Length: 91
Image 1: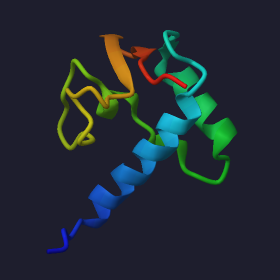
Image 2 (image 1 turned 90 degrees about the vertical axis):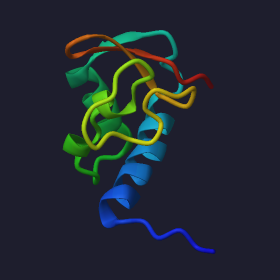
Image 3 (image 1 turned 180 degrees about the vertical axis):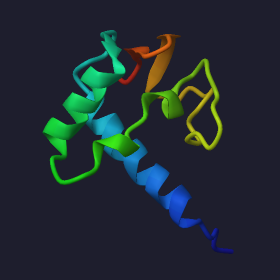
Image 4 (image 1 turned 120 degrees about the vertical axis):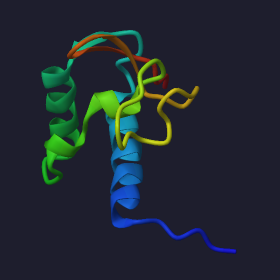
């Protein structure tokens, strides 16, 4: 049985994979949203960085329409405070 995804879900899955890849090598770093988007944009200059929202990928915060990784061990970030995140992804 195939699982059908909405376009929004497909986009979120794509951005999760790309954001996770871009954050490798930054494990343990505490970064502002602006810096996270800058790192993402350096890896993927042709992808709109505005879709790469760290708040959608946190283990300790769940927002409306967040990634399926939110509040799981697969989350890319830990939210420290508004606009600041610790990178959880390892090599």
